[in-house]
Amino acid sequence: MFIPTKDGSFTIEHPLYKVNYHSIHGAYQESNHVFIHAALDYFILNNKHKTINIFEMGFGTGFNALLTYKYASENKITINYDSIDNFPLENFDSQSYIEPLRELNSYSTIFNMMHHAKWGIECSIVDYFKLTKYNQSIINFSAIKKYDVIYFDAFAPTAQPELWSLDIMSKMYDMLNNGGILTTYCAQGQLKRNLKQAGFIVESIPGPLYKREMTRAIKL
Image 1 (tube, rainbow, N blue to C red):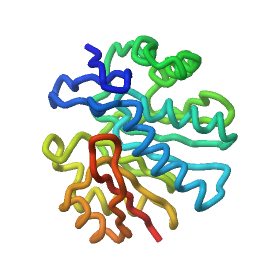
Image 2: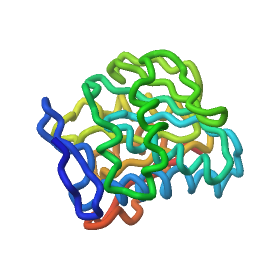
Image 3: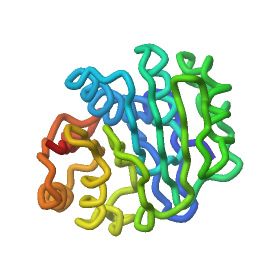
Image 4: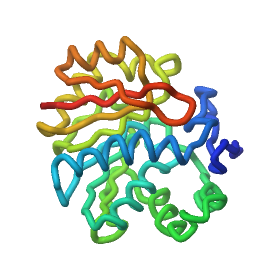
């Protein structure tokens, strides 16, 4: 069941963990703020790359992937987008999910393609956007490439503590190119300590609406 959020977009509750995929204060504004503006846009402004490798921890509703595609099409950049999800959604109605957002309605076909892309196989959504989804645990995942940007969008540490550990943050560090960045909505003190111990330079930056802080980590 779709849950309306304060900016008119939807979120949903995960059937196993009983937590929402996106903020009830606004799914659209949260994804834009945490991942598009604080991660992708920030990286491009500081690196001027025209081809970006992105890794997303938690495909979920596919909302972050869709907004990244939108950014790529508007800014004429090429993106290789890899995303992992150990418990993917089933029978997800992608068209209805974005229907309240008129600015995204023209992307409904693309969003549907993303959700129907086969797991473990690279899918060329368009020439400048390639998507590969992995249906497995990050704990056992072995990356075959280095990434420029990581969207760390796992459920909160209270729901999935194993995904916020030092071991996982060290894996994220190893998966990034030098100069790469990781962003997450989470601002937990232990997370920041784990990131620093893994080797990251850690920044606490303003969070999305109704959240004071979020975290950006940089691999120098």
